[in-house]
Length: 279
Image (cartoon, rainbow, N blue to C red):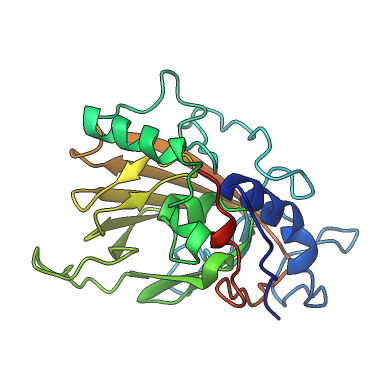
């Protein structure tokens, strides 16, 4: 089953609507707690238990994850602060919790203003196209991580996004590689933290609904750390000299949906929204 498309005069308004309905729609699979999830004395999943591990000893990041805090909260609520960590990113404005905002170059600041001036109607999410990695991480619709020895796959319910982080030691393609929406991601383990580095993006990326850009010059480093069974922290560093005067870092907090599952999301089915966009 796919989500219906609704008329949306403003991109932001519809994104908020989708976020508000995500929990209900993602519940179309019957609740089911997979074998191996630790349980408390009450029989409920013990989300504070130590994280599971792969046969090689590394933490297993696998599971269905949700970015909202708390799980039954409204879309994009005030985020739970991470003690001692980077500012927490939000979906509409990735820099909402960064004092002074992002260190835009003049070109990037002007581009963001242009995008906001037309209600962000050119955001790829508004056209059923692959959305930026940061919007995927902070989106209200859940995502599923599947980890094996040589690859970590992230399946995003939003726009049916799909990413691979290759951990088999291979080199990334050279500078003449075709740019990809999600770039080329390779990963390595630093203790219990998966460090993923991505390059080779297209030149027209959106980090958030407000249009903070990222470009083909960007190197994005993600540090995935499963703090417990029920909590995942992702620290994301963006180094993009075309768009920002210095690298910067934000955190995305994720909570496990121990009995949840993704649904099929076909954004472009019966799409009738773009004719109603208002500048």
